[in-house]
Length: 384
Figure 1: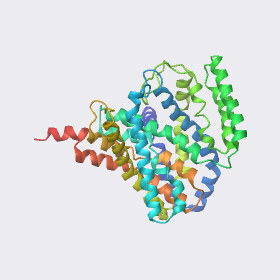
Figure 2 (figure 1 turned 30 degrees about the vertical axis):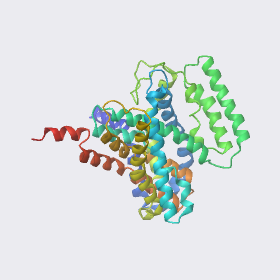
Figure 3 (figure 1 turned 90 degrees about the vertical axis):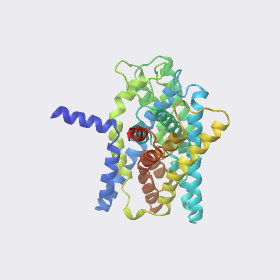
Figure 4 (figure 1 turned 135 degrees about the vertical axis):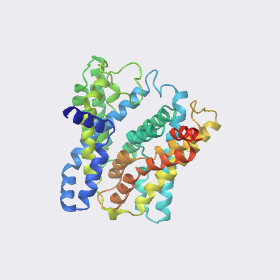
């Protein structure tokens, strides 16, 4: 019995199911005991969003770092070009659809949330792709697209959504010191990740907090300094027990604590009144379900016309399915919403759109069935 419970707990963590569980609890709580939920969310908002999520974004940065080392999926421009172009198109399309709807609805204050539908949740998009395809180039293509999307998202968060009044001078001095400390640790061949996190990371967090940028990005500039393997172990590959470099040790140590952070993130941020569905909700949902697939498809078509080749085995039907799978914003979309708007109706309605973006997975499966892509192609072939 104990072994089964342990196996269940590991499976829940491996499939990132704690976040939607937290979101579901928050929705029920906020719509039944609103006052107590509001007190809980207010009490934990800072520690979860500004501190705990720093480790979530650090793990996302780890994937980017490993993908750029020799042998990594983003190492040469030829290998990275098509998914990176797809990621850019997959951000431009949703932003344009969102802004168009906001303009047509005459709600200019909502325009600040243009980046919310641009996000792609790596974990959930990956799970949907794996449900549609077994072993197929569409899965690594989607992963590369999502990683590039997250990398651009980190830049957008830093540039367009400062957490307070910008104080670039004081922030720059402290950040330079944080990078200097991390560089010295790397130069002295410090193999434990803790000094990087405690010394460099804490100073980087202070720099971003005082400088007015979002402190949840604090570990992103520190992660590249952690000693790491010379070759990429693979996209979202499990950390092998033999890997003892600082970056893999960091990922191994924080993998499950970050799942707990995501549970709390869902609890703190997803408690939206069901009546909050409004213009912002439909703008976000239209951005992801219309803008994502159109943006990805159009950018891939333009890149192909310019001479870039699709990965072997990836057809245009698969590109369409990937476009809808990438429409799941969820975690990052929720985070962008909290960064874009203060508490109030606009935050609630855009959060609802971020939560409903999970429907992109259902649409992706439906499109795959309609186009007979992935596992549906085999099913169709087996019919008499």
